Length: 138
Image 1 (cartoon, rainbow, N blue to C red):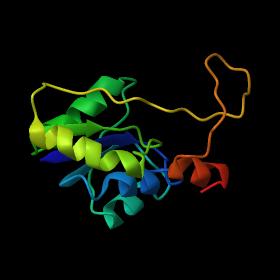
Image 2: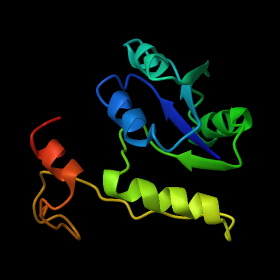
Image 3: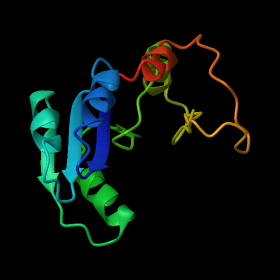
Image 4: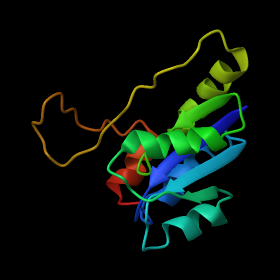
């Protein structure tokens, strides 16, 4: 019931983790590639993604809309190619999609930075599995 839609360009370092983080949750994966010269598309395809080429036109919305038009599932999960869903949140999302009752949902986003003291900066507590992976550089 859920399509993953991602746009990307030269994201070989992050696209695998992005797709793998939601692979148990989604029925299809759509990557709109805006001109990669690295192995972004090859990695996505190896993980089951359908890839579409779309020349970058300085319009993020156009690229996303191409992905949406190819999605066949009733729900769409929109992620950037450097985003992942925490393992502990997969079941929550699955339940929301199954139960419905809303036209859409917004997820809380955690951003990680080395810039201590930035606005609303909070140190990683280490209680989220993905935080420990990020801290180790995976």
